[in-house]
Image (cartoon, rainbow, N blue to C red; front, side):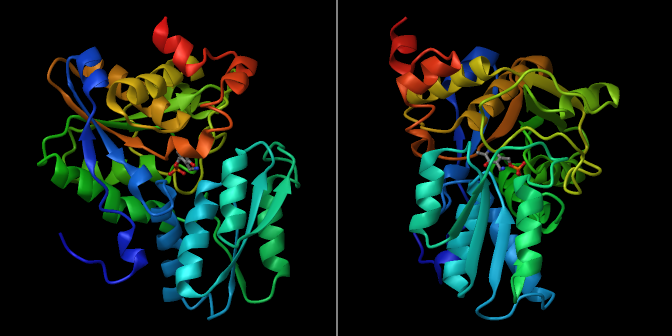
Length: 330
Ligand code: PMP
């Protein structure tokens, strides 16, 4: 046991856990990187710290300055925590479709919250464009721009990937996760390939995202829809450029949700739907790679962030997903 010099040093160095049910289902070893163990309870703390420290190093932000960002919520929570620790303000723009818990958390952390209607990226009212405009209009402010600021994926090149490599003793056959900004997928993918070009990197794409078709057929095209928060990308962000994707899976909400439920009921791990989609992808990848293969994925955030949605029977019913307990008893 050791002490941390400050709160920011608590970001990263998360545990890697062997997932029993997924490993048995695939006849392989499937490991989950416990990103819910970060101070803001998601993988996005890493990107938030990296983006702010990059802006500081480049002299873009002065003491007392403001960080503005458009986010599904987790990046905002990470930015607000890091900003508080460093003496900055935060303005967070979020689609109003995201979970109540994320909004309450952001307000509790002292972020100024701006809610906008969900809109396509081509619409000027989209949360990303709104956040850029607010940053431009606010004195002494920076726009974090997580989608196209590659300080985001650098956090995974220098942090997440080397940690996974070390935790698996350099014996890893595959890695997969979904993409929001793509920072995690591309960053971990690039850094693992550099260590071992034989590691298979797979995209696990939710319905409603365009990347599956892009990596399969070179065409950005989406199909269906997903209720998963924080994932599902429709374009090649700067963070995704050059991502070494070998194969891709399209994962339904029902398939991802089944793993959310099983991880909680069988292993006591409470995560959000993007983690379930990642685990479903890891099971598929491990089956392709063969018996005994070793695959890692990301447990992106805590399920406590979705008590009003994913863990709420009425919400589940409205979305056509079987409630957790009933599903467990069936
Ligand atoms: N899962 C959740 C819950 C998220 O909030 C995010 C970030 N938007 C991701 C997965 C995807 O991470 P990335 O932005 O690195 O692609």
